[in-house]
Length: 456
Image (tube, rainbow, N blue to C red; front, top):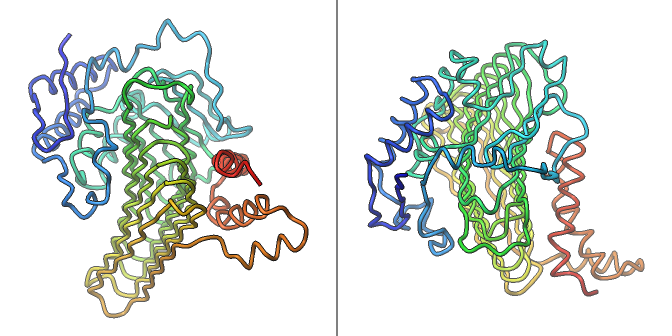
């Protein structure tokens, strides 16, 4: 067995030949077509041509370097992709499992433990398949859109395209409206080390589809010898006139370092709505990038989080406008307790041709303890002269007037505070396109607040 090691330090030693062999072995183990192996290897070459982040880059300089695992391991890919075969005796109960859905895939350590698609969705030609299988069954579709959002943003992004072991492909054909949400559920095997995910969602012309992407740990109580890394690459494509909704909810193991890059390409008069909710992980860093190159497009980006302990939760977002008359809106709301910290760095970039753009960003952080802190940084770069833009950022405690109003009506202080918090986060949670998932998020907010708010 050959082992290649990736070191996240600036002077990391990379062994290109071993990495190429590992990627080739992984692709062969999954019976992937030659063109997909070529895509993986091309992505690897891009990664090898990039430097590890140094901490000086604008999108990385607020990320606590010491919170990432020192070595992001790339070991025997065949073992990583299939080690659950023959030993999984019980399918883990997933906290996010839906009651009703248009389609579902549930993965545990790279193996499919549940799959389903509604009869109507299947007859309409909707696809929900593991990415490797879809590349064989629907090569023209997958090859057309895989990586079509643009070049990788950094070395992690490029590696994610090369070494992913878990992936899913979602496709809604032209004109098809999928009423119920699709679900991609991942249970993190905490004993298996790092996880690399690749999610590709395509809403073809005039179609409508929504995906819930949810991750949970199989055993959040166990103390791990080494912190795992979970990396997710998400690509969202809404073709002309299409409407795509994507919601990501994670409750990874508390020692996890979670990195995700979500990139959307909004077609003419199309829309993409992204909602993320973070409850787990020691470090959670989300990059969300929206390409508004076409006229009349709309993008909505929503972020919700509740941090406790010494968690670090970070959002790096970009609304990149080139099309005429396009709109985008960013709203992040978070609640922080104990000594948890949050960072939001948001950029609205409007090119000279992006006239009549309407773009906004709002970042609001509620601090429930003196040790908690937040650093919201909204930025504007505008080169067009006929636009409407705004940005707002706020950090502060719960409004004492709101607490007084509730307590004056006999509501105990702890319950009153929770009511305010739930109301503060409700606008974000209400954007999740599934009623059951909204209830789950509400429950997770309560669970996350419980340790710090158990005493009245």
